[in-house]
Image (cartoon, rainbow, N blue to C red):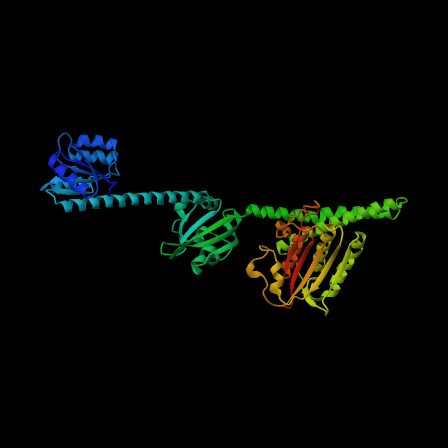
Length: 508
């Protein structure tokens, strides 16, 4: 209490002295003012925690001083002092803002208790006011956030009646927020799905969040595609009192998706058609129909045909990645024997490897292995990995190895952290492990995860190579996902790279 200061305002010196001695004995610091005017002057100069204010004083009585205090120092706690029999005046003073009153003559203990109670009351009042201000500030911030959201927000109670909507929702639906209050949410959200499948209704029925539901909103004169999510609204006790649905207008995304569809269609037709014409023209020249062709010219024509083939392959890879992402790529799993599949694909790359001075080897399990696979997709998957290995290997060799790991969990430990959710990694069961290893410069450690993303290439820091579209490995990841398998890369600087693939065996 040593830091609490009390101003005693009383024109009777003996009463003021008694109060001063008793309060200082209790640990308070005190100052005396002889009348109301002096008290106001002292309050203007110094801060006090409490004022003991006599009602009857010369020049300016206690009621008038109290009124001035409430105007200029509203946080100051005031306890009135009055002569016995004047309690009515004291009560009137409390109506005007005094916290308590003391009747003269007073006992020391009663006076101290009333002072302590008044100080504690004021402390609690100020704390409550502070908390209320903070709550109001947070409410205003939240209101500003909700009203400024680009998404529409609709909050409903347990009966599915609208409690509130934000500005974006009001503009989207063309309604006034007050006009839809307490109306069934179905009247506001006229959707092309049953009412009980609206995310906010699903939350009310299940008590669980309902995320990323796409549906069409029927608005006057138009239909708007939306993506919506809803979550429960709970009170302080954790009881669900309703739900809130966030509705995102995805018209622009749909338009972009259509543009992408048009672009992919253009790639499929408008680009491949002239490339086919170029190859046909080159073939005419190579066959000598337009005149003799010497060996050097034939070599350049072969290089041109090869470049056109690479361009067609890039276009096909882009189309396939797009089909995977759009859910339109059909993966036909058929029981196939592993050996012939690998031999056929590796055989296509042996001449290229020999021409580059590289050794290309294939290692197969001792016994025949069959697994469920899409033959065409598997061929392109392995072909992409071999093409990359040839591109980034200047000496040494490339090995394709297939094996049946005894412990799939141990084999999967090499999967780069973050490439797959931890809970999805294989821990048991039979798997086929296919690896493509090279002796090139390797892949930087910070690229081991991202190289399987679209349009991402790992720049070989030593060799400075970076060519292609960055779609080949993205296609490989899509193929492995379609086969419910796993693909990852392992690499050490200057010691080459190994791309590993785990294919599940069996039909489970």
